[in-house]
Length: 129
Image 1: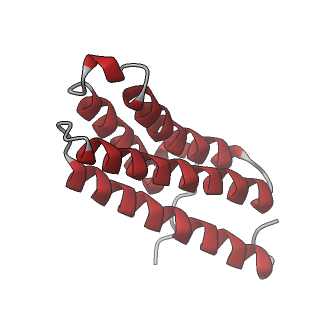
Image 2: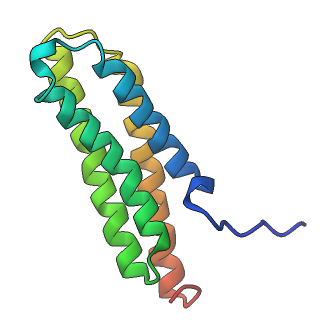
C-alpha cells in the first residue's frame, strides 16, 4: 500500500478547499444584495466566509495540537456565522442560493469537526505533539 504524501501547504487540505469554495460562493452571491447592505450584511458575510478559510490556514501552520484546534474552532464559529447570515438574507428575501451555501457550510462543519477529533485522538495516543 503506497504511503500518502505529507501535506505541506494549507491549500492541499480538503477542508480549506471547501472553505475557500464557500467564500467564493458568498462573494458571488452577495454581489446581488441591495446597495444599502454594502457595509452591512454583505461585508459581514464576506468577512465570516474569508475568516473560515483563513483560520484553517493559520491553524495548519501552528505547531501544537492545542493551537491547531483553537484556530479550527474559530473557523467553526465563522462558518456558523456564514450560515446565520445566509438565513437572514434568505428571510429578507434577498437573491441568495441559500441551499447551496447551507450545504457548503454543512460540509465545512463536518470536515472541521472530523479534523479536530482526529488531531485530538492522535495527540492522546502520542502520534502528535
